[in-house]
Length: 290
Length: 205
Image 1 (cartoon, rainbow over the protein chains, first blue to last red):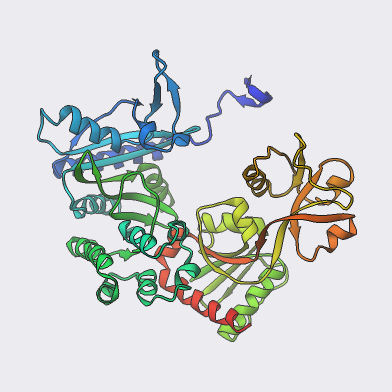
Image 2: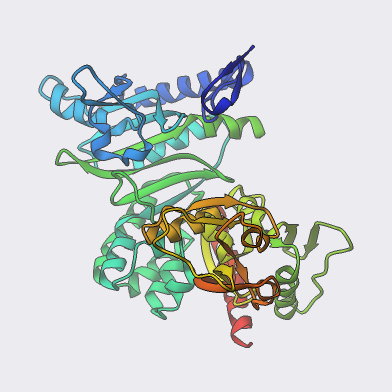
C-alpha cells in the first residue's frame, strides 16, 4: 500500500523517515547492553537517573532554532521536541530540585530530536558543580573497555582558539575549518608548535614558549591528562567547534569516522559543571563493524 | 598509511607529479585502475565532485579538490593547503548581446553549482530561479532555458565559442588539499609532515 503526500511523493507503508533509527535483533540487543553497562557504571560512580520530558519550552532559547522541531501549545507558546538534554537537566536540577536534594550527579538515557527528522540515541551525564573532567573520561573509558574498544580520545581546550582569535584578530572560522595554511602563514613559532602538538609528552616544550594566558589553558590540558589512566590520548589544542555550552576543556572519543562520546566543562546557572554524552547509535555501528 | 582521494584528470596528474618530486619515485596508476599503492600512500581516483564525500566519510584521509567544489558542498572538512594548481573562476555568463538586468523580477540561472549560485544572488537580495543542469551549461541561454549561467571558466574559450561572455566573477578557485577531521586528529603528525613537504615543493614553482 502507498500513501500520496505533498508533491506526489509516494511513500510505501513500510517506509520510515530518513534520519530515524530502527534496531532489531543483534543491534537492539547491543543497544540494551550498552545502556545497561553504562547505567551500572554511572550508578557505581554515584550518578542517579533522570528522565526529562520530550517536550520543552526553553530549547529554542539556547539552541539554533533551525535545528529544533517546533510547534505551538494551546496558548500559542513555542514548544519543541527535546533537541538537547543537558540544558533541561541542569535547569531542572538547579531551579526545581536543587532545594530538595543535594544530589549533583545525574544521568539520562533518552533520545534527542533534530529538524527535520533526525533521532539521536544517547546516554548523558551531568556533574553539577564539579570542574574535574577526568571522572567523565574515566566512566567513558570503563564502558568502552567493557566492550573491548580502545578509541582515541582527543583533548582540547575551547578557550585556546578563542584567545588566539581575539588577540591576533583572526576569525574563529580559521580554527573551525582547521585552515592550517592560514595558521602557519602567520609565521608565529609558538602558534606553529601548538598547531602541530599531538603527543601528550610534547606538551611541556610547547608550554614553555606560548604566551602566559595560553600557558594557563595548556596546563589545564596537561593536568587533565595526568589524572587519566587511559593512554590512547592525543592533544589538539587548536580544535574548535562552536558548541552549545562546552567552553573550556573538551574531549571526544573517536573510532575511525565515528564520535563515540564527547564531553567537557561548562558553566550553567552560575555553576561550574562537567558533562558528557555517549552516542549509542555510533557505538552500536562500531560494535557491529568490529 | 595515508589514503588520498584524487579527482580524475589533470589535477590528479599534477598532484602525483608533486609526489614524484618529493619522494623521488614513480606514482603512476596502471591503465583503468582506480587504486594505487606506493609506500605509505594509497591513492583513489574518483570523480571531482565526489572527493569531499570520500574524505568526509573517511574512505580517504586526505584529498585534493577544487575550492569551487568545497564551497558548493560545504562539508565539515579540514582545509589544509591551496596547491595553486587547477586554477579557474566561477563566473556568471550571458549572451554577448545581453546584460544582467537586476531590475527584472524573474531571473533564471542555469548551473551545476546550485548552492554557490543561490548564495551569490541571495547576497545581492535577488531571488533567482536556479535550474540545475549536469552538463553543456552554455546551451541554456542560447535556447531560452535560462537568462544566464553560472559555470567554471578556465580560459573563457568555451563561452566565447558559444556566443557568451563573462558578466561577473563569483569566485576564484584552485585545487586544495583537504583532510577528514578525525584523520587530522589521529594522524596529525603524518598529515602535517606531508603538508610541509608539499608546501615546500609548490613554493619552488
